[in-house]
Image 1 (cartoon, rainbow, N blue to C red):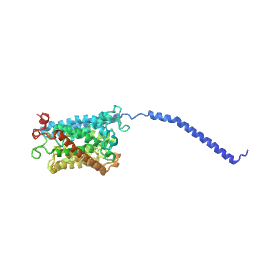
Image 2: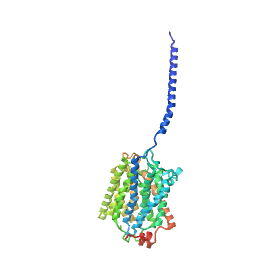
Image 3: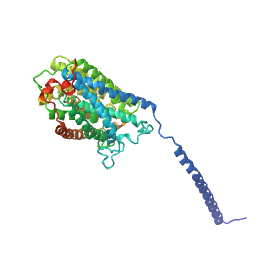
Image 4: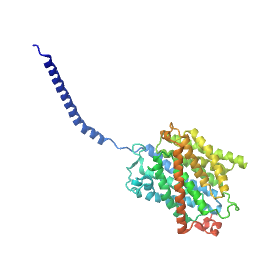
Length: 450
């Protein structure tokens, strides 16, 4: 039978339409069946699980960093003062460890690492005060580090402990113990916690791209500048410039410096929060920089003073550890080597020459080593960052690093100055002249080294 072409075309169109509708109906039906299945699969997806390897490394790192203060810094500083002040100096590190641990648990951690709401660019809030809301199941950086938040808080607590303890080196042998306790408590909450938040807790410096892998800004510039302000406000020790104030036991200081060096692996490599290749790079960078700086300080002193001293080489190694801290997870070992050499030479000049030139009494070179070393390291991080070591290095710049340094110096200097005068009004800052001459061991603690 002869069917007109127009009818054939219409028939084909109708059949195609019917087939298309049928196919669409099938797809829709399949989608309706698949949607609940997909939702069920998403609901059944496991939550991020605890990473036991990372956790084990962070538990180890935390213990290493705590060792840096007690006994590391306590011995390092204790050996450098006169014998009549050794117990008072060691006591400062130990008491600060106790005080900061309690304040960090109560308020410090929350101010540094919780959401501050409308003020989050500058400081955290109180939502985690007394560690409320944190359980054994709470993970820090879920999906990335997967470590218990308790462990992260404890690790950060050890940083909060050593930072104010470093300040004490600047005013060694001349602050009342009661004044020290009040000053350190206020300084932790008003200065340290906000700066830690700025850089690591979601604040404005971290958001601006300021790089600080393990604390060049948060710990060392912060402590060094505060130490300088303390030295200036308290004034010089009685007899400074006329009385022999040589270290009484450099063996203590060598042991302390050695403990600091070993503990620094937890400080820098631990700041990766994971047991991985970047932690390994940070560890290698730490060793190279410390060794290079120790040699650089030693040879600089050898050239200038004609003899290489024990105090010089251990101070140089610490200067290298300080300077590589912000860069440890951003540079390659060659960069760390450069940082160590620069820090060793410049910190020697600062500690030995500049304080005498300007006439301030930075007793144990807290500013000369930690302040100057921290600034050197922060600046060179912006210059030497290697994106093949850490992809964040692609955004490094000298300008960003200067931005972070300037804001930290300004806030720390002003706030420290104000806190000191509050403490001075409450209990006074210095013991009497007679008590200082007798020594802080007997006047502040009623004990002496036999």
